[in-house]
Image 1 (tube, rainbow, N blue to C red):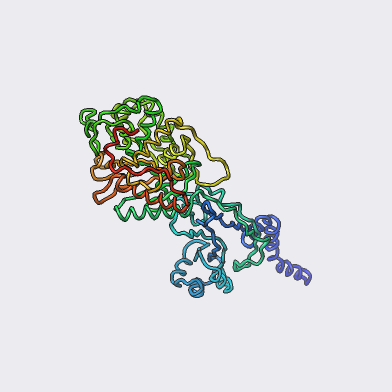
Image 2 (image 1 turned 135 degrees about the horizontal axis):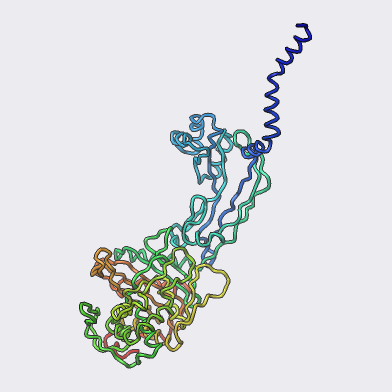
Length: 554
């Protein structure tokens, strides 16, 4: 072989490795160009979504109830971590965490690992300046509730990814958040940002203003806590409303749970506070005369074999006002028979029972009443004084607010939206409402609600005491009760409607007049004083004895 041939052969052998390299390069640069560019972009050039802070939540006077504060988190990208042991030792003093714990996290089988959240700016700056491979800092926000647990059952809470989980935080998620900013970020091989496009906005949505008053809420929660301590309650609810607009001013529950609101989600048998519905039907349909009396069987009446109705205070003859003031189950039952199931059912619906109130909070209950087609004489009688009926606190509050304001049922509101109150319906004529107000004022002046009196003010309301149903025996308990009082003041110009519901008071006192009405009186006196509502110069003096006037007063 001559020299030329040998040179050609040597050249071919030398260039042979270049052929597959060239083919591979063509494959990568031409055929796979778009895919590789996308993958590289995913690693080093990304679009970050910077979520702005959630809007503040404030009370009706602009006082903070919830706020978002700047916060930073530290994470690790395992693909860029060169030595987990080294990194754990370096990060431990910077994060204030144990090195063993960090190492355990770094050994987890996932790429991105959150090492610490809720960091201060100084903590985040120390980590950032260390420029540790694979370690990054992200900015965010943490939700702060400046008043601790105050109104947390209403406000609710958020998840770790800053989304509403319950209460107002969930119901008004759209109003509390806005679209995140989109920013292009380039990172180096260690994962550190080396370029950011644009500028993050510092704006956030307008504060969400609630109808709650922080002072009223505090007074309500304080009064409820005192009642729990004094009577060993299993739970309780206090709700306050402006009867002229339907705005909810306070909504307290015990125990306080940011994940649920008992005042909205729970129902109960109201007992005697429901008797005013029977009275409304009787007056509105003119089936009972003002001077007509009913024989109350001296405290015990067998309405069916094995079914006996009892009164806590035996009575003989009472008119309708006396029945309500004396809270006679027997008298109410006889009035209900005169009213009839259809009219009783119609008035129950008119006053807002059997349907959700529309307050807009998650999980609201609707209450229940036996269907009209299934209602028997006994079920009508028991429902007339609040047994076999399930109601929510907001329904009771709204019904009594309708009586307080002259007969208009308003949809309860929790957020101030700058619009007129939502009028649902007129529940009864003005003449009927005026008579109901007179009855309820009689309850406080001469009847079972005398412990709800506020010196200098005219007060109207109704006590309630209901035996609780034992879930094991399906029978009504003789030792477990729900005590309640609902009323409004001042009668001539009502400013507040207040409902107090106390679950299972202990210690031998359990009537609504003993445990719930005094709570109403204290709370109402506080808010009337706070608002500077002048006493009523025409407020009647409380009667010294209820008995002489029960049969005649209307």
